[in-house]
Length: 431
Image (tube, rainbow, N blue to C red; front, side, top):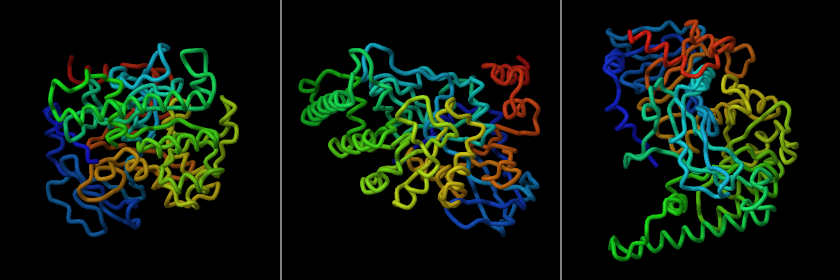
């Protein structure tokens, strides 16, 4: 499913448009393209928010701004398929299934967490609500641009609607006192009930054939679930234990919705089943598994197991469970446990793009794609490597050489002050 940013560009400031008039050439870097061979030394040419050329023999326009990238590494911007940056909120305690809740109504784009994610090289994020519900709301796909409000960060569908998925969960998180379920079996039963209702609602709309007299009354919750049934919204399913993972696969097969497994702590125990179902998995690799009993067996070997089974896998931060500034560490830990280097880097970029239906726009260095990329001081899997620059749509959003940006990368007083970045921009603009 293609995504469009057409409504966004109508909102771009005059200064942004002027900045994108000048081609930018990054010369002499080692280019990790993801979809092709590495190029060293190579040149990356971007203009008007798009990648124009990638290669070892790129003709640089005479009016281009040249960046000496010798000794540095450039790779696509990182894609985080599961984050809670922006102080996002979801459903409340009134019920376990709340598909009508939209996270975009609660995201603070002036949160310091946005700048920290940029410092970690993250350029695209799936912002999700929490996992204390069977379904806590609709997720929001964003580009981590420097924006004044959520509209500046949104990724749009071709019909002009904001792109996003649906957040669901099972296991212990959603089990509590009524009206929430008390057992795993009841959790699955409640989900089935709602999808049956959504299927009936969708069928009534189809049978009405546009006749307003026959159309059912609009139901925002069932409307969102129907979008999942039709494949218009991917279900991002928080799940840990092997039996919970299999329940997700069972529900997806029963109702035909597209799903991405999120966390999947026990993935290595059911890797063959995941691969056979053709379901992508987004892993969270952490040093000290815990917090809940069902995550106690989380292991770095999950990446290796899924790779060997032939499943599509990526990674996420679950920020603030792990810090967005250290996202690349996920790939390094997976490789340390036996996963291949190429697929680990693919998992940080292109796999996430595929999970968000954005593979035609982001995830690799290829002519025609969005100019989302990062400049590194060293190998992305090295503990010594630092993100030096982050670019989104051809605009620099993080520069480690800038003391204000460095603060977000390293921490210290003021690094967690929301609004601070926006206030800095106001001062620069003379307000």
